[in-house]
Amino acid sequence: MKNTFDNIIGGTKDIADKVAQKAASAVNVSRSYVDRAQLRLKMNAKLEELGRLCYNMHKTGADESGSMKMVIKELKVLDAQLEMAEEASGKPKICAFCGNKNNADNIYCARCGERL
Ligand SMILES: [Zn+2]
Image (tube, rainbow, N blue to C red; front, top):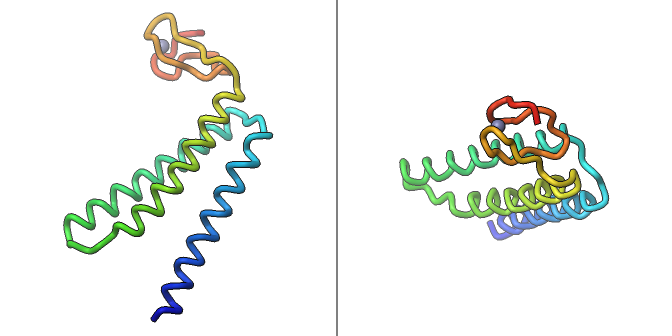
Protein backbone atom coordinates (compact mmCIF):
# COMPACT_ATOMS: atom_id res chain seq x y z
CA MET A 1 0.00 0.00 0.00
CA LYS A 2 2.79 2.39 0.94
CA ASN A 3 4.64 1.58 -2.30
CA THR A 4 1.55 2.37 -4.33
CA PHE A 5 1.21 5.68 -2.51
CA ASP A 6 4.90 6.47 -3.07
CA ASN A 7 4.50 5.64 -6.77
CA ILE A 8 1.55 8.01 -7.05
CA ILE A 9 3.47 10.78 -5.28
CA GLY A 10 6.54 10.07 -7.43
CA GLY A 11 4.40 10.11 -10.55
CA THR A 12 2.74 13.41 -9.72
CA LYS A 13 6.15 14.90 -8.88
CA ASP A 14 7.46 13.84 -12.31
CA ILE A 15 4.47 15.51 -13.97
CA ALA A 16 4.99 18.66 -11.91
CA ASP A 17 8.70 18.69 -12.82
CA LYS A 18 7.90 18.29 -16.53
CA VAL A 19 5.35 21.10 -16.35
CA ALA A 20 7.89 23.31 -14.55
CA GLN A 21 10.49 22.54 -17.26
CA LYS A 22 8.01 23.56 -19.92
CA ALA A 23 7.38 26.82 -18.07
CA ALA A 24 11.10 27.57 -17.91
CA SER A 25 11.65 26.86 -21.61
CA ALA A 26 8.73 29.12 -22.48
CA VAL A 27 10.74 32.13 -21.24
CA ASN A 28 12.99 31.94 -24.28
CA VAL A 29 10.27 31.20 -26.78
CA SER A 30 8.27 33.97 -28.31
CA ARG A 31 4.88 32.37 -28.63
CA SER A 32 2.55 32.89 -31.51
CA TYR A 33 -1.12 33.71 -31.31
CA VAL A 34 -1.94 30.01 -31.84
CA ASP A 35 0.29 28.98 -28.92
CA ARG A 36 -1.48 31.42 -26.63
CA ALA A 37 -4.87 30.18 -27.80
CA GLN A 38 -3.76 26.61 -27.05
CA LEU A 39 -2.65 27.65 -23.55
CA ARG A 40 -6.07 29.20 -22.96
CA LEU A 41 -7.75 26.01 -24.14
CA LYS A 42 -5.57 23.93 -21.79
CA MET A 43 -6.43 26.29 -18.92
CA ASN A 44 -10.14 26.03 -19.68
CA ALA A 45 -9.89 22.24 -19.72
CA LYS A 46 -8.09 22.28 -16.34
CA LEU A 47 -10.67 24.67 -14.88
CA GLU A 48 -13.40 22.33 -16.08
CA GLU A 49 -11.58 19.39 -14.49
CA LEU A 50 -11.28 21.33 -11.23
CA GLY A 51 -14.98 22.14 -11.32
CA ARG A 52 -15.85 18.50 -11.95
CA LEU A 53 -13.69 17.37 -9.00
CA CYS A 54 -15.24 20.01 -6.75
CA TYR A 55 -18.76 19.05 -7.83
CA ASN A 56 -18.02 15.35 -7.31
CA MET A 57 -16.60 16.04 -3.85
CA HIS A 58 -19.73 17.90 -2.78
CA LYS A 59 -22.08 15.44 -4.49
CA THR A 60 -20.58 12.18 -3.23
CA GLY A 61 -18.46 13.28 -0.27
CA ALA A 62 -15.38 11.68 -1.88
CA ASP A 63 -12.12 13.36 -0.90
CA GLU A 64 -10.87 14.97 -4.13
CA SER A 65 -8.60 17.47 -2.38
CA GLY A 66 -5.39 15.73 -3.54
CA SER A 67 -6.48 15.74 -7.19
CA MET A 68 -7.71 19.31 -6.86
CA LYS A 69 -4.34 20.47 -5.50
CA MET A 70 -2.59 18.79 -8.45
CA VAL A 71 -4.90 20.49 -10.96
CA ILE A 72 -4.41 23.86 -9.24
CA LYS A 73 -0.63 23.35 -9.46
CA GLU A 74 -0.94 22.68 -13.21
CA LEU A 75 -3.20 25.69 -13.60
CA LYS A 76 -0.64 27.95 -11.92
CA VAL A 77 2.03 26.79 -14.37
CA LEU A 78 -0.29 27.32 -17.36
CA ASP A 79 -1.26 30.74 -16.01
CA ALA A 80 2.43 31.72 -15.70
CA GLN A 81 3.14 30.41 -19.22
CA LEU A 82 0.24 32.40 -20.64
CA GLU A 83 1.36 35.55 -18.82
CA MET A 84 4.90 35.16 -20.21
CA ALA A 85 3.55 34.47 -23.70
CA GLU A 86 1.37 37.58 -23.55
CA GLU A 87 4.26 39.72 -22.32
CA ALA A 88 6.45 38.39 -25.14
CA SER A 89 3.80 39.27 -27.71
CA GLY A 90 4.07 42.99 -26.91
CA LYS A 91 1.91 45.79 -25.58
CA PRO A 92 -1.82 44.93 -25.60
CA LYS A 93 -4.11 46.84 -27.98
CA ILE A 94 -7.03 48.50 -26.20
CA CYS A 95 -10.22 48.56 -28.27
CA ALA A 96 -11.43 52.13 -28.83
CA PHE A 97 -15.01 50.91 -29.10
CA CYS A 98 -15.46 48.57 -26.10
CA GLY A 99 -12.22 48.95 -24.12
CA ASN A 100 -11.27 45.26 -24.35
CA LYS A 101 -7.58 44.47 -23.83
CA ASN A 102 -6.50 42.61 -26.99
CA ASN A 103 -3.28 40.81 -27.90
CA ALA A 104 -0.71 42.96 -29.67
CA ASP A 105 -1.02 40.99 -32.89
CA ASN A 106 -4.83 41.14 -33.06
CA ILE A 107 -6.24 43.03 -36.04
CA TYR A 108 -9.82 42.96 -34.74
CA CYS A 109 -11.14 43.20 -31.19
CA ALA A 110 -11.70 39.73 -29.71
CA ARG A 111 -14.83 40.95 -27.88
CA CYS A 112 -16.70 43.21 -30.30
CA GLY A 113 -14.98 42.73 -33.68
CA GLU A 114 -13.99 46.40 -34.09
CA ARG A 115 -10.87 46.92 -36.24
CA LEU A 116 -7.95 47.84 -33.98
ZN1 LIG B 1 -13.93 45.93 -28.82
